[in-house]
Length: 119
Image (cartoon, rainbow, N blue to C red; front, side, top):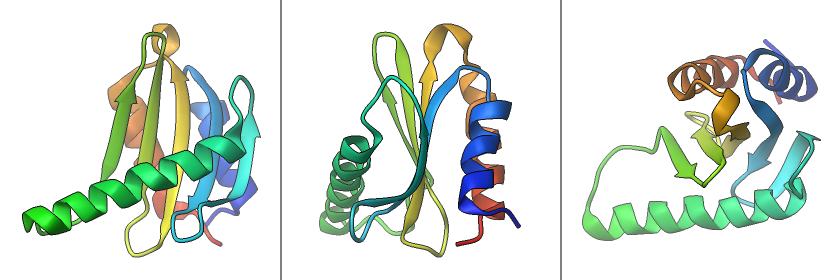
């Protein structure tokens, strides 16, 4: 098991291309921990909470069963991954530089880190 800060540090130190990371409670929209540069992580936590809630409402309206594993937002120069931690109201948020990132490996490592985080 890893603490919040250990999990965020591991994301930034072991996932190639990562520049910022946060652990967010999507019930409140508050970041429980965050680190990195190039983005306002408090604003990103609140905004991505809206994204998660909107997708959950849409799935419910459509009658889609099951949960969200992750949400990928692809920008010109970045990937933003929102990984929902199963059984919790939490998500790990990761910002990656496209030219330095391996998206498949980043998703795999983020999932592993999510399974280890202890709040």
